[in-house]
Amino acid sequence: MGIDLNVKIGKLKLKNPVMVASGTFGYAEEFKDFFDVKNLGAIVTKTITLNPRPGNPMPRTCETAAGMLNSIGLENPGLDVFIKENLPKLKDIGVPIVVSIASEKNPAEFIELASRLDKIDEVCALELNISCPNLKNKLISQDARATYSVVNAVRKMMDKTIITKLSPNVTDITEIAKVAQDAGSDAISLVNTFLGMAIDADTKKSKLANITGGLSGPAIKPIALRMVYEAASAVKIPVIGIGGIITALDAIEFIIAGAQAVQVGTANFINPRSAQDIIDGLTKYLKENKINRLEDLKGSLKI
Amino acid sequence: MRVKIFKNEQVAGHAYKMTLAAPVIAKFAQPGQFVMVKCADGIQPLLRRPLGVHNVKGSEVEILYEIIGEGTKLLSQKKSGQALDIIGPLGTGFKFPKGSDPCGKNILIAGGMGVAPLLFLAKKINKSQVLVLIGAKTKQEILCKKEFKKLGCNVKVVTDDGSAGHKGFVTDLLQDRGHLFKGVPAMLYACGPKPMLKAVSEFSKRRKIPAQISLEEHMACGIGACLGCIVNTKSGQKRVCKEGPVFDAREIIWE
Ligand SMILES: Cc1cc2nc3c(=O)[nH]c(=O)nc-3n(C[C@H](O)[C@H](O)[C@H](O)COP(=O)(O)OP(=O)(O)OC[C@H]3O[C@@H](n4cnc5c(N)ncnc54)[C@H](O)[C@@H]3O)c2cc1C
Ligand SMILES: Cc1cc2nc3c(=O)[nH]c(=O)nc-3n(C[C@H](O)[C@H](O)[C@H](O)COP(=O)(O)O)c2cc1C
Ligand code: FES
Image (cartoon, rainbow over all chains, first blue to last red):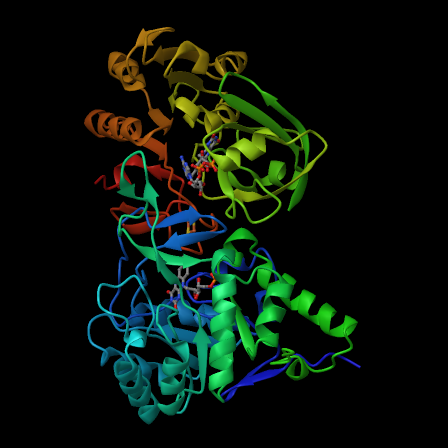
């Protein structure tokens, strides 16, 4: 009997739980030489804002111990160009497309973005990025009331699946997770990057022009895993685990901790085939452990 | 892609040359393109390192590199026979007119390790006249002089301390040779530190001689996915790893 890797997130049906994380997969074009991107569970796009954004000054990436910092600052072509140029190509892949969106100044921008994207059939779901650490203002996801208000406003005007992406830079992740659920989010994804920095001792300058940036990669995995575990224990909606997933075993740990699906981020840079290798590894693990349905692995942590 | 290391040897005080059995990369690589090398098997260092394609001989690919930090140090310790995980060829390399004008002048300008991708370029354009200007800190750090000469190139060197050739900058040599460019089609190709590339660009603008320059930025992915390697150009922001590393000098907006 075949292994059943299907998962459901809101109305979204995925053939497997492996998605690629926002901002780490370009617009998929770049990966077509490395594997058949059609095999992915879903693709989350780079975060799109209403207007084009050039992003932050260079340098805006820097390597750290078992991880990296980035302060890209949501460089993107803006909604109009995205719809006209990027989306048609993404649609042709034949994989569910999750469009990540963010506001720049006013949370009301979420509503305009959502209302325009809601009308487009190829957009299967929206991921509300209320957790980008590279913008000047305070994160929406650091404020329970602001989180409720943004998620609820989008919920009221849209039937499509809503995934709310949370920041780990909070004291109590369960509080924000519950608020997102109460506001009507179909799922939550976590974690976005941890705010961090690195300094060059010779020049006494930060290694990023923006001074601070978001930490990702294996360095954050234990903390991300703990937060996914806490969030999954606190809410009923699906949790998508993100943070330092490099191998299939990393992904499996997140699923055991309670994640319904996972997103692969920084690993795409190191090995552009990572997501495919993780899908293969996950299938192999389930076979070897005689688990027929992924669903039976989810939240199977023994306590 | 896993390829086999044929040879990995110190070729100067600070420089190493690695020869790889990499038929696919050898077949498709163009001068100015690079590869992303995984220097460690595990996750430390995590990211790949960008290194230019230095030369292609049959199915073999050479890279020339210096030890800067952890990644290149680990690379220098690799032994022949070991496997190396690399991706490539990547990026957009130099453009050179195929059966180019035999009277045309090609001037290759190398600063320090910037010499690495230029040998492969010289090999591809050696039908026409090639002048190579190599700049380095000291005589010991002058690389590839012999190899360029073997290809029939005219080679001039300059050092910061005057221990070989002219004392000063490679761009001084360029100024002195202004007369070479009178009335013949010419192209400048440059790779090296930013101030040098900027000086070459200014010269190119002043003399109205086209220049192609190879830029360096920190690269997390090398394949155009992270947007970490941006350069400002007259036609908008470009990714050094994808639309570059080689750009038309006139396009670059210098800070
Ligand atoms: C397109 C391109 C082609 C290159 N070709 C060559 C070549 O042929 N030979 C050669 O010796 N060097 C080349 N370099 C520079 C080479 O990539 C760096 O020296 C190397 O990444 C240093 O890694 P490290 O771990 O030893 O140093 P560390 O300083 O420990 O590296 C820390 C981080 O900074 C990055 N980094 C450090 N210096 C540079 C640099 N100059 N450019 C880009 N990233 C850097 C590293 O990749 C790493 O992510 C090239 C760079 C680029 C962008
Ligand atoms: C270079 C880079 C760019 C990113 N851009 C975005 C983005 O635009 N929107 C977003 O929601 N997350 C963005 N992220 C965060 C990732 O989607 C992911 O949440 C984070 O990197 C943690 O996962 P990882 O450790 O697997 O990379 C970015 C991460 C990196 C490294
Ligand atoms: S290094 Fe990632 S886009 Fe260029």
